[in-house]
Image (tube, rainbow, N blue to C red; front, side, top):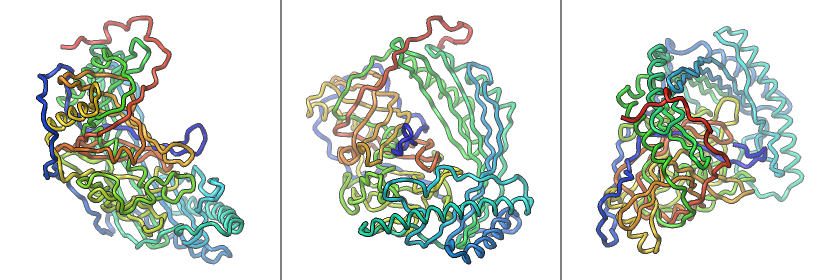
Length: 600
């Protein structure tokens, strides 16, 4: 996102996966003192379901829209190639989305929307793949990359109406591209001694793929009643806000380009959230959120599982309401699986998105680390958007083709501790000349390399209980009063700009102090911060269990669905900062007693 109007990239993510291992606030029996454990060569368990893309061009499933886009693309490209400054690449992507949003608060429906929209993205490249209109200028301006590119296309399958919209948008984009290329050429002429950079575009093979049309099916009346019951149950204990909501989407994308690709993809997705909140006596806003994701509304949890979600968030909120504010801390900590997934997404994932290694304004944290050790030799990381599930959990970052018409594929990023790769779109960097299917965007924004399904693998692991024993050993070794355990994180952000420190910050919700005698204490009001290279090299051990964080991630190409799966991690040293507590106070009046239920 943009911070205060200044082009400082801060990638921000939010979401949630399955409930983490529950850590009770009741002090368990003291743990016996043990010698430092050696990591056994037992890998963490990962069972995945992959869905490889299949070529398919069945006429009965092919929409007439795809043929209209293809015909107009060929007509316009023939004309643009004949211009004095010819275009060498032309791509159309039409995205049709139906978004249904239902939300209840305190037992009553507060949101009921059902929107359908079509958006058109036209990409015209002039110049050559070596130097074209998309190149960043040396003064770091973005005249050649407008922040908004969204065009409009009429609904239906009227050939004349759609072709007219394509023609007008193509003409506009070609004129803009010519203007941008002029700035690029002037920039290169002025700075003749500028160091050589990688080309501006990577060609790829033509892809033909047609998904059958999907249909979003759900019983609206049933869901409204479910959400009303859910939100009424959520008003328990200290909660003054209890909301339950769903978002259902039906997505169909059509992509054609001058390389000959014709891709029609169609899918649905569903999301359910249960959220509670209250303002603490010191003015801090406290909240707990649990979310579940699925391919269809039928994949979302039944009422019995929703009751478990409600119990989880209301119990945690009551505990947070009583918890003291924490103090700054540096020392050993455990990040439980879901928290570890967010940690890797923010600390590592955004910095290995390929385009950041050549952007003039980027800190390029890992650009010179290919082939070098950046993590323990028993740890590997890859990203594979083709994965449908991992250990039975559906992954939110699944897709078959990216938004630049390139097949998704598995990309090895860290292999036995060494950095070996980057996530690539069609913007090449030195040593990585082609895309690996990670060019992604929201409609209306230029695509860049983004994460999909990030997975952390370990070849050595210990049981979760042994990880806590190792934490206490580190507490003793570092002469700290306690260690920290983080079981849930709401999200985070990371700065990748050269204008600011190359730091990350993640926002823990459930954070516990673990004392040498085994006592646990829930605390609140803290953030985890640090720098990526130090943080990755501070990993000392991992658990055998893998958990998944599902959510959405925001960066310069908009919001995209993602997942991050990881074992619990023992970090030798982690820095904890005090979070912001607003100068506010709770309401002066008590809420109506009728809106809150007592806990059973």
